[in-house]
Structures are given as structure tokens and as C-alpha cells.
Length: 526
Image (cartoon, rainbow, N blue to C red; front, side, top):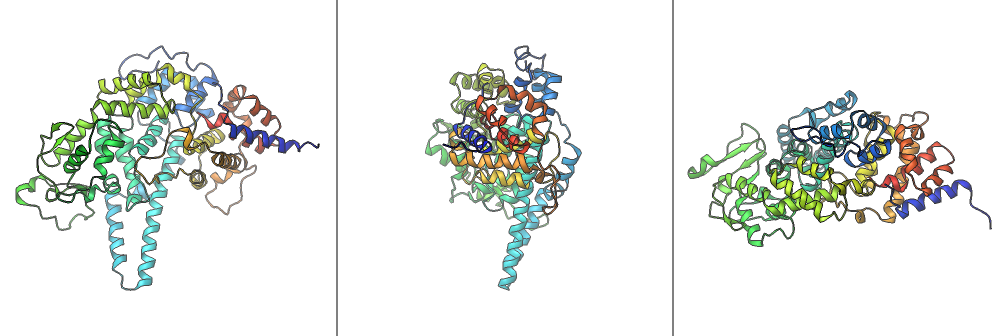
């Protein structure tokens, strides 16, 4: 019986390895105080450094491995957990500065869009109305696309990699979807001003920032929540998905009471100078307007309320803060958030003992996210998990580009957005409030693996599409990265499985070698 051609055998070996999903083998700084010594030798080889980078950052590359090797793991992790502002590469910052979401203040952007929508709706000519509405929708799409592009640029090049990881984690946890209403215009500011500043700070501050942001209030319909016209959507998800978790000790009565607390908390897109709303004299002093956020006393239920077995003592908007304090500091919240962080960073079914230690730190530190993560990163469970956590589509694409092109600045993120979309994890587009799943079972189907092989081929064979701003411009020669020459790849190679080594040895040319590496089981995990 004739043997298949050598190249076909290599491709078959690589695909079989991917579909089999063979797992690859495998002191922090205190907020105030000297570095711990427990991790002094946890990453003292290039291979170990790559494993840490693959988990803590958006993916290992030669530049980050050199930085970690130079500074040592305790100092490097200390900077990641308590990051100081550090500049992006100038070419990256220039792309971000040119975006409308960077150039136009958020409230002005939304005021102008709302005026444009109203003007389009008022046009008497149907064809003109149709064209104006299409232009309005296109502008919303452009703003959402800019937020996606900015996220990818920061994930690729920010020195504060853990902050970018946690920004994505919390955006998924406090999910809003660009598929609804005006959220496409709001998601960039939501990430920038509600999520990112608190991604490694206090959970209560993060919770409060999301609770007041127009993107959340529009997405979960609290802008329509009013006395005698209760909408429970946000109240329910605030407890089930954002704080206490399913089985966290609340009842349907608590959902109803929290919805009453949240009445009047909403959004106003009336521009400055517009006629202020008429408010009843008895509660006029309670009216609050901050940017697009509005608390309207006429819509608030001022009756007595009980939440989680205790009365709400405050009045007006202060009721919301009292309720958020209670939710953020509940023991169930400490356990729920700690477990979700452990699922993200350790395993789909994290060890209960680790979750309990993290929850204890969360409670003791009043919800300090960095301190809770420090407990996780110092644990034996975390060290044992390195190289085993399956990459979701966003992690897979970003890690592949970081490894292949290191610090070379991508000029066109559109192919990356397309690759992520093909795998079903479009940024900011999960329609339900639970966010994208973080477990392997959600992303490890045979169809997903075939798509990943095609994306690995795109990165490894024609990745030069990332470096041209004109889609009609010719690709540079060669159009593929010299992956085999990367210091990070050379450090990675000894730990590759026999199947992966065999596939690489049979590669016919460098682009094929790149594809087999990027599609290998080892590169599917972090």
C-alpha cells in the first residue's frame, strides 16, 4: 500500500495532535514590605518563565521572557499585581489616540448620536430616513470596533499585562453586549472608566463603577426601572452573576427588594442646557446628574425595604450604595468571586481549599483583588496548573500573535478580530449577562480545533496582513514570521511532546513549521 506524501503525513500528525488535545508537560511583592522568597526559584529557567508568562500575561514572547529573566519572578509579579502607569509603545499609542473614543468625551459622543438618531427618525422622506438610519448604525459599529481594536492593542503590548488580563476578566464578569441598544457607543468608556481603573483594586469600587455606568444600566434595563413599574433584570443579575452567585443565600423577595432599591437609577441623554426635569419639591434635593448617569427621585420607590434580612437604612440614591456595600462584603460574594478567579487562572474545577484561602484573603482585605490574586499566585495549586489551562479563542489569537511577532507593532487588527469572531467569542458581543464561558468544554470541539488550525496557518504563513493598513497593498516578503529563530520558541521546544516534535521535523518549509507549532496542543494551553 503506498505511503502518503511526507507533507501530508506531517499535516495529519499535527491535526491529530490538535484534535487529541494532548496536554503539554509541564516571592511576590507584598503591597507593603519585602519580596517573598517562596517564588525566588519558581521561574529560574527559560521554560518555567514561559509557563508563568503564558498564564499571567496574554502570552509569552521573547521580549517578556527577557524582562522576567532580568528582574526575577518576585519583582516582575510585584509590578504586575500593583502596576504603576507605564507607557505603551509610541506606535500603539498613536493608533489609540486617533480613535473617536479617545478624541471625543463620552457624554458629548452620546449626546451627538442621540441627536442624530432623532433627526433621522424625523425625516419625512422614507429613502432619506433609511439612509440616515444606516449611517447612524454604521457610526455605532465603528465605535464598537474601535473599542475592540484598542483592547487588542493593549493586550498585545501593554507592559502591565496582568491589568489587561483582569480588565478582560471583569468585562466578561460584568458583561454588557454591543448587540443591544446604544451599548456599542458606550462599551469603550465602560471598559476605560468603569472596569480598567479598578481591575486590580477593591471589588466594591469596581461594583459601584459598573452599577453607575450607562452601559450597564441600559443593557440590563435598569433605566426603565421605576416605582410601580418595577424591572428586576439588573437586580437579579447583580446578585446571581455579579456578587453572591447562584445558591448565595438570596431569595426572590431579595431580588424584588433590590429592584425597588434601584428604582430611579438610570440614564439621561439630555445635553447640557436642556430643560431640567421637573422633580417633586419634597425630594428635589435627591436628584443627581453626573454625565449620563441620573438618579431621578420621581421614579424612585421611597418605601421601606429589607435586603438579605436587614432593613435598608438610607434614603434615595444612598440606598443603592448601602445595598452594594452589603452585597460586596457578603461571605457568599467572597467565595463566588474567588472561585471564578480560580477557574480563570487555575482549573475548570479549582481545588476547594485554594478557593477558601482566596475567599479568606478577599474578606480580610475588604475585597482587595490584587491581594486575593496574590494568594492564588503563591499557591502550590497554581504552580501545578501551569501549562494545563485551555485557551479560549481570545487568548489563543493574542498569544499566537505575541509569540510570532514579539514587540513588532500590529498596524491592522482587523484580521485578529475576524479570527476571534470565527471562533465564536466576538469581543463585547455575548448576548446574555453571564459572559463567555471560561471552561475547556465550551471551546474544545472538533470544529473549533479545525478552525484553530486554519488560524494558526494564517498567523504562521501570512501574518504580514497585520502590518499593512491598506488591504490592497502587497504583502511584505516573506509574509511569515521567523518563529524558529525566536528565543522564546527555542526555550519552548525541549518541552514539546513527541508528536509535536515529529510534526515539526516533517514540515516542508518555515511557514508550515510555524503552522504546526501554533496549532500544537502545547499552544492550545497556557
